[in-house]
Image (cartoon, rainbow, N blue to C red):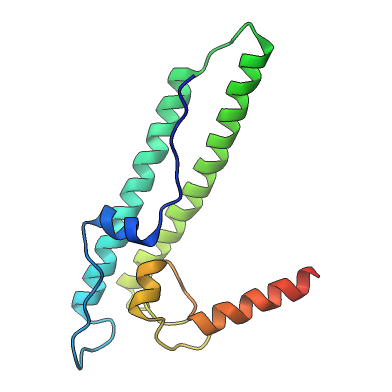
Length: 151
């Protein structure tokens, strides 16, 4: 059986998928100007398209490869592979929804600012995680709270 090669997408490959280089800020440039907005819109749309293509590919792959193997071990292996693929697809669908929400934030001119404290999230953080909605300080506090609540 052929395995699907899935790997986590790093922020550098997100930029590569979009065909863009890291944004070069200019002196006295206004935060979230039209150039920055277009930069992130291109990244998000390319990322969304890539995830949708992956999802469509996995649907086709699973449909084409679905077999009723007579050997229980072969059948179990295939079921496990499909189970992993379905979990990955569910994560991708969730991420696609988050990307669409972020694109709406761009359209509504709410992109790039922390939802908690309303300060600038920052170009580099957004390039690393374009769907980020919290600045690094608020995200760190959120993670500390979650960790304390789980203990």
